Length: 270
Length: 307
Image (cartoon, rainbow over all chains, first blue to last red; front, side, top):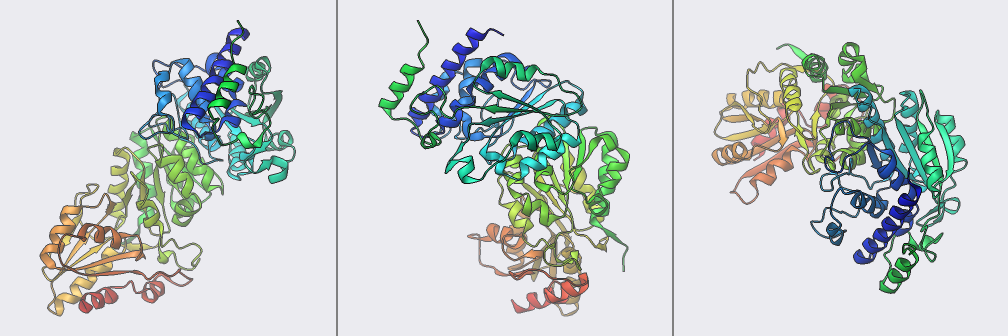
């Protein structure tokens, strides 16, 4: 892993997120910015994928269960070469491949359409069962928001993942602590997330999810006979000072002045 | 009386049989495999059977994941849970992604019987039919169910197979099964009965009774409600001018509405729907429920004569 190169990619993805949501004048910058290191490590360091052959049978799979972080996924997919950045102008626009939430029928590199929260782990469990049945060695990753853990289906799926001993499945929680109506604790307390997943039968690894090295290390920790959960503590709006830890940046795009300020903060060092 | 067999029994046998040659078929159930009859498949192919436990939402999305890996998942539970509780998973998890998942749900309609209204799906056809790209099939007897399962394996895309619980008469048909192509079981000139599922048998009995009163009734088996056979529906409606639809489902959103959608703007017809009149089911024997909800041959004949 080349840390400097990945950090440069992260800055590019963050600029993509700002430009996408500014051009669309909508979208979800806060929860996209918090997940950039996780997605960048997955797509540039971890996953067996080929942008030139996005449907190859033995590829690793990724499900963006928190589908509203689509700008982060689109940024990473574009930087990785799954499609040209000229598609950005169609984000959230009629007939574009970059829908408000990921659409696998339209966008290369997207393995499952998401947006309705709570479904990603179940889909990933199905994929992991399929990979095991096919014996092709494919690994499956899914990224959830922390507020999303309020959906009961997540726990149905957690039970199934442990029951089937899916050690080819990694569930990542983007634990930025905020959701639309306020903090997790104000809206619906999640309790001890680590303990919950451990009680369901997961190997749980708790990290700073905006620390590239920590994210990479967490993916490399081997597990056997049980699924892995990476509880990634992150900062909502990470990398843009006026967006960090602000609930208000969950679901609105920056205006032109805000875009310029954000892009300046995200410039590569000379 | 002809031989009887439950449609769900034929499904379970057909799936286990097809699983021998098609290794891509997998089956999922939610702790009801001896009711939905997927246990036949589970016994033969335990490595390709996944019991999700009592967690229908998770089961349906697990099927989405398996389909995305190239498998052909048949998901089974009771129709009320599959189309109701797991609706978002069918809609967003499977159909919106275009995944090749087959929803084979049993115990549909009031003839589920004694378990009562909480378990009787009377709105499932409506819920599935309204999803873009969803094929909806309602076999009329065990033989047709077997042919339908084979057709669903061979077609690509999400599909709903609606099945009843109780043993119902084998209608002694030897007709080809083609998705989207209605079967004309009996020709007639005064009225056409468009029916699906176990009500096809009732419609045939009604037609016989009407014949003795000098009324010539055609009976058309609409086994595929979506995509519906527009040509056959229109040609028989135009020929007979009187149309009665018959289904063990709410009169809202089911076969009756699918037929009406074809007829609107295409001529003047007398039209009546026989179905569950916008009410919930209740406990009772299947026979008592068919009587109470106006779903017998006698009720169909009365509907015809009222036009």
